[in-house]
Length: 270
Image 1 (cartoon, rainbow, N blue to C red):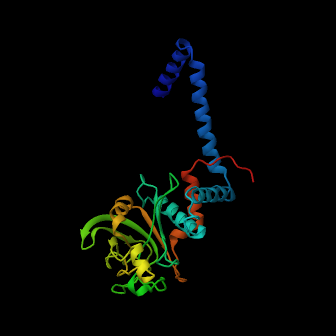
Image 2: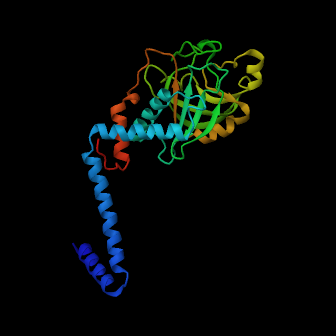
Image 3: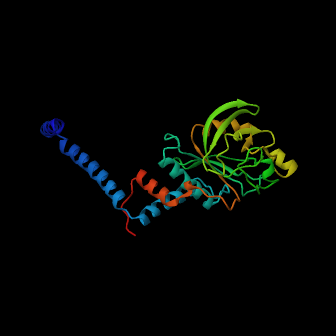
């Protein structure tokens, strides 16, 4: 009450003493009205309107980052984006980062099938080769497992954690977030690391990359830079030919609602 009274008096004095006071008041009122309008839009928007805005953003990032040109399927990117919104809504990803990593194991290992995307700047930071597990397949990733000692890759969502120095140099620990599909990643020591069998020269000689014990292994020359970029609670989505895979993080409806809550909804008419 006192604060409100003081504010009223102060604004009154400003209007008397300042020649530009009417402009200031108009600006303040405009800002307040804009915020109220956005809040109202968020509260009254239909789900169809929210979905339209969501889909527009997915397409905008996909196009601006030239992801089609670099070989990333729109459907795979959309799944990863849906997951990112659900992780963000649950405060699981680092709030200061907008990094999303996508690995598409439906592509052969001779292709660059890993994308590290800054969703805020809408740019691809890295597009590189990445190896799959030894028992997952030869040139292509055909089988997946969550079991220890399987030497297979696992599909699904992962959160990056801390780094450490191991036999492969700087490496990055991962937490698998999909129960039954990759949640044994820590137990299996599934990490991001560099490897000499992940290179263009290896592909040229053998027609495919070498294979890991289940880790997403990277070219040695960029592994450190990649790890430093994605460490500390950023999201990785590994897509693969696993028809049984399901995830709560792929819930489109909750992702759309989360995105709408975090985004100022424009006034729409559809």
